[in-house]
Image 1 (cartoon, rainbow, N blue to C red):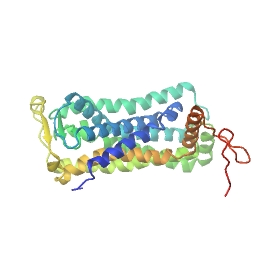
Image 2 (image 1 turned 60 degrees about the vertical axis):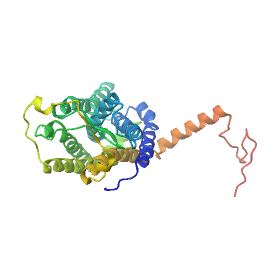
Image 3 (image 1 turned 135 degrees about the vertical axis):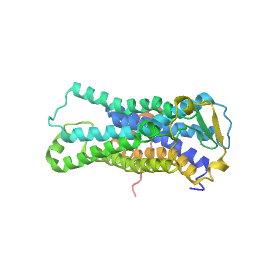
Length: 331
């Protein structure tokens, strides 16, 4: 990690990650898959945020957009727990499907489940903003090629208020995932009946959702443990007072790439932060971008565009296209 990939390589992959999350978002929204939609929204906008920053601060260290830096760093703070929280929503929903006793779920129960998912997937990330402000030593840092990054004063309160949240959410999500797998093997036949009654979720999609959430948990927990251990090993400062922590809060540290890219720990922390978001986007598309329901929507989009352009998408039994007049010669 002393020599990370060139900045333009990340720019390309982060923009692709944004597109990969944006493409399937609408049909998942139509199916009211709250956890999945939250996952795509947070990750997709995260990729877009990192993409914009990689362009604005490419070979640049000027603090020319402080308002945008505040918006960007606030989103990063929320994103830090939002992806594990969205994964928790997915694992929670899969567990409830596996353990529900009634085949039919009432509209009130669906609304209640959506509200709980929103409280987890939106409420917890938003709650991070005031918590983070308590332990923020100054406004933000500015890294060349990366852009703005939030700063946490490494004190004892920083761990329960900010640093340990991804680990705690990941552990709860792992418990849900383990219980779901156990319940599935215990009630395989009843589980199949429940899925057959759910028009938005079949067995294949269920297992893809579980695999995605499980992989996210397997990434979140080790990374969170590493972050905690790394911060502790650097020495934890004693909390003195609010005024001491927030002294000269408007300060913005500006770090050239020649400095942070030659610091192993800084390079790992910065590159892992932004590439993890891109990896989540590609993982999601890998699980759902080529599934049957995705191909069906691709065909609908292709048919719609073809009709607008006057291109026929139907062929006769002899292989002759009706509107273009070109014949398909079988090989």
